[in-house]
Structures are given as structure tokens and as C-alpha cells.
Image 1 (cartoon, rainbow, N blue to C red):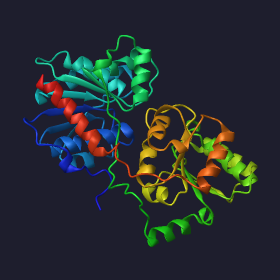
Image 2 (image 1 turned 60 degrees about the vertical axis):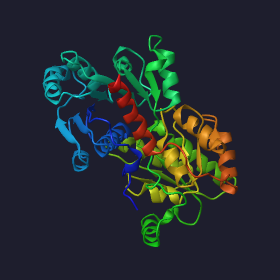
Image 3 (image 1 turned 90 degrees about the vertical axis):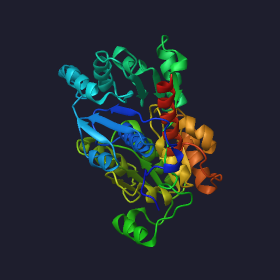
Image 4 (image 1 turned 45 degrees about the vertical axis):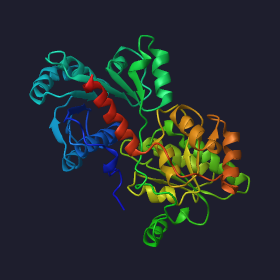
Length: 383
């Protein structure tokens, strides 16, 4: 079996000519934008192009370099006016690299990159990706200045066009993020060794259907709604377990204590488990009866939705933002109106009783995202 997020090499054609593509990002620690940068870097190398990422560095640099890309350390993402002093340094780097494409994935690096390429002759093509529903305004508008602006969902494209009347729709391309189906194989079940070890570590999760809500330790992710869901199911005589996966993080101690108090007040100490982020999310999703997506604010995308559905696991989520968009297309039975606790409980009970069948994923694949992005690069440089 291939390792998670390994590219599908055959999906990327041999290029007519080699390009040099520079991606700009604050750092390479973790997160969706960082993961996408690595995935595109990997596809560029596989296609015979020169791939460079400029950032402040981080734990993903070693992976990036092992996969054939070059990393240049330059802190262009620190939220400080002093970051604009890096324009000259970035311009010197770009003058040496002579890139065909400069692709910015975050606002401050985009500003620095925008000013840096203004001093270059010939000037590289400037591409941006908008990964989130950023607050409209001048600071965010830099990500709409690319010759091509990539939106990771139709929801995000609509959001941008509704807030920026000057943005030409023809410059905006929807290229959703994708997953490698081999990393989340249809019908996957973890082996006996993992199964035994997991329930030895978390014995409270055994003996009843498991609900999993993945998400960092912030109230935006809907942890309170998930706890109240379990409490109401218990009141109705439906026994379940809840895993709040990834909620325990440094600096989130007060929020975790708040959740534990809510769990205690609802009498759910024996039914709810909180954990830090884990590397075995695929196996956890695979044993879950429901994967929850209950963010109380719309999100630009919902990668968890496609990861779970790719494994053939039902998803229950609020029908707004990118999550609602994905569920409407891929699993309508899992949609409920945002913050409608009564409908949430009813739908959870229905899905736990009989979940509609889930077809094998035919879209939102990593290779689709890689191929579409490289095609966009080719389109610009062929002009």
C-alpha cells in the first residue's frame, strides 16, 4: 500500500518544456495550505519541472526536499511590518531562479511576492490560491490579484465574487483539494493489532457505535454541539461513544477544561474521550459509525468529508460552506441545517439505524487537483 499522500505518478504527463515554479507560504509546519504546497511540489517534480518553496521552514521541509523540491528559508509570513523589508531579499532570490510561475498561498507572502516580482524583467506569472473565507478588505484582496486565482471550492469562489465587484470571474478557477484514494481505501478496516491497541488505550470507546469529530481545540469546530448530541441520544436510549479527535493542544487548556465540565454536567464521562492530534486518523474514521463535521461557521472546504466517504464511512454535518457543498454532492443524507440541534439528533439516529450506501469516490482525488493545477501553469506559460 502506498504511503498517505503519495502522488499518483501516471496522472501527470511529461511536460513539453520544463518550468520553474516557486511557491510562497509562511512556513512548512502543518495545515491544509502547507499540505497542498507539498502535493503540488511533488507533482511538479514527477512531471520534470523545477519546484522551489520559499518559507520560514518547519518540520515538513525534510519531506519536501526528500521528494525532489528545493526549499529556500526566508521568513515572508511573520505578521509584522518588518516582513515587508524582505521584499528585496525575495526579489534577489527570484532574479537568480528566473521562475516561470510564482504561486502565493497566503496573504502576507503574497504581498511580499507581489512587490518583489514588480522589480523583475521579465516578470514571472503570478498565481494565488485562496484557501479560506478570509475577512474581505484590502489586506485579503492581494490573493485576488493573481493572473489566475485558485479557489478550493465553489463556495469560496462565490464568496470572493460577492465581496469584490472588481474581480473578473474569468480569472477565478475552482480546483478543489483532493485525497489519494490509496491513502483512504474504500472499505478499509484496520488490522487486529491496531484494533486491540486502540481500545486498550481508550477502553471507554468500546461497546457502542463510535461518533468521531476531528478538529483542533477551538469552539468553531462544534465540540459543544457534539457533546449535546450524545447527551440527547442517551436521553432517547441510544447508546453511543464520542471521540473528540485532536482537541487537546498546547495553549487550549482552558477550552479543554470547559469541554470536560460540559461532559461532566451531562453525565457523559464514560462516553466521551478527548485526544491530541493523532497519525492514525484513517483507522479511526474506518471504525466510526459516524464522522461529524459541525463547524458553527462556514468553512471553505471539508477535507474530512471526502476522507471519510472515501473509506465508505457516513458523514453527518452542517449544510453550509464547503462541507455543505460536498455533502450535497456526495452524501445528501448527511446534511442538516446549521445549529439545528433537533434535526441533528434525528438525523444521527436515522443514520445509526440505517445509513444510505456510499458509492466509491470518483472525484476530489489528489491526482485531479495536481493535474488541474499543472494544467493551469501550462496555460499561463503557453500564452
